[in-house]
Length: 524
Image 1 (cartoon, rainbow, N blue to C red):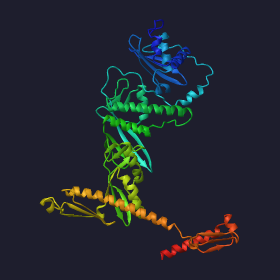
Image 2: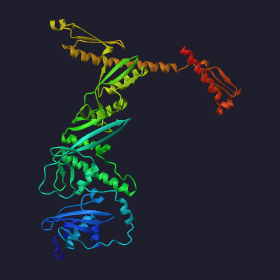
Image 3: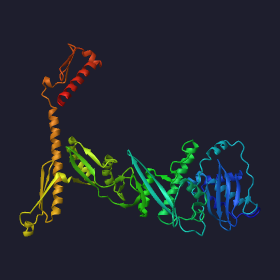
């Protein structure tokens, strides 16, 4: 548009792109002459300009051939990254185009009215201090009509858990026929959103103006990265303003860190897309995993060793990825489990940690069978160690014909540590009889453990009930005589007032000496 031409761009077209506040501020920026360094690409209706705000921002606008409609726009300011609609800097450039304050100056360039900075602006000194934060907004500029071959994004998932704390991140490959490692995710996002071509190798150059991500999982991942970039921009902007976290918190090198909420969103995204992906957890090699809906088959083992018990995780690899244990990794499959299942399984996995087994002391075995084992069996099948079992087969008795009476289908199982014996001959199949017998055996072991625990509790309660005899007393305080006597060790002190005032050294020394002597006597 040359100076003096009639503007085809209407106020209503500009106003409908933004809210009232952005429109008013943009008009004021235009009147103040804050739009400078305008560039129009040859043979196009694309305008690029620098707009002075708290710092210099790059603004791009594309009109249709007639100059009546606004096809696309973008800005590098934080507001454009965080909110939808045109910001005040875009509105200011559109007002300059509408007013026709442009003069042709060489090939593809346009000069604007010289910008005069307002005198005494207090934010000038702070604007330059924030130059480290390149706050590139997600671009609203539409790609060219002629698109290139689609670009594919391939995620690689990494997960580590140390001392109860988890750390997870993503790394990406990008390309068409061949995929390249993205060495700097932050630089990729900045360049792509600024419209700068990016080279990954001799055979791959990604031009944001013409590139498009492949439909499906690649497009979904790109939108996911855009949302994370908004969080990064917000961290940089507000953190930079107050002197905190100038280098970002999400995009670091080739890694994209996942917060708990971002992790759940990524896993849900991959489940929705039904797309396997590469993953590496702990010391395991990177392999292909998939996400399915359901509950895994977990197997635990229970064995007795030297009078103590040991609960062993027999499934090769089991770990929960998110804090609520809704996503459970079992070998090469990630299960999205129901909330009830995760609530029951979470304490068990926390108890195991990185270990493959849990010791159970002899005194805790009754409580384990009575309280813990029923909870574990809600989410996992507990197998009793074969070494603790003696299994005998014999022919069933009773009615049933020659097949029943001549075939050893009946089962007798003896649990050696407890001496419990279970028999079953209900079914014609030996395998089915064994399964029934094992279920009955577990129930009887639990019942025996409960009875033993109840007997122990009853004995403890009975032992706490004394006869009232003087020999059962612990200590006597005689106020008329000023005497204190500890009946357990036969110690008498005539210093009741000092003991009541807290002078317990002599009394404690005597108790410690007596306790040590008792331990030595027992050790002999």
